[in-house]
Length: 74
Image (cartoon, rainbow, N blue to C red; front, side, top):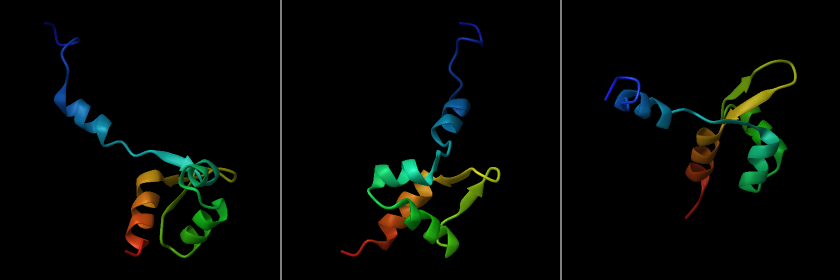
């Protein structure tokens, strides 16, 4: 087996730990909340916004889900 066909465990670990980013609209539709809620949380410093350019703002999906889970009562 040559080195190009062999799986690299370090690379696989990196691929599984990649963060996913989404726009507020698509993320909110997945989670069943209003897109404005995501922007409001970012304005209040509860989650991080990643501004790509003047028109594109992305949010870390895992961070938003973790925030929702931590805010849940019960």
